[in-house]
Length: 131
Image (cartoon, rainbow, N blue to C red):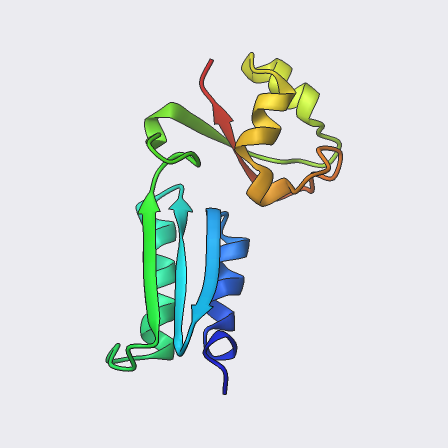
């Protein structure tokens, strides 16, 4: 079994959990996973999944380097609010409500939204950068 296959559920969780700057690369028999999460709780979920897959963490085939921040390296949680997308929302309406340009919200959430700012979905948690 390839190392990436072994830890696919952890990678999926990282993608769903809004890990920004997610980097996953395999070097030999070691998988490197790194990025920034929005909270200690999100970080704990990733470590819990790692512990489930390799209970004693003895395999030595994963390096998990996840930091807590507001979505940008060097920015803490205090620099952003969060908003849960509701049906009918648009980035421009969310931005107007929070006094932030929709482009800034999109840029702060590319890991969640992707490249198309029109494809937000109900239930997504977005970081709203401070003005």
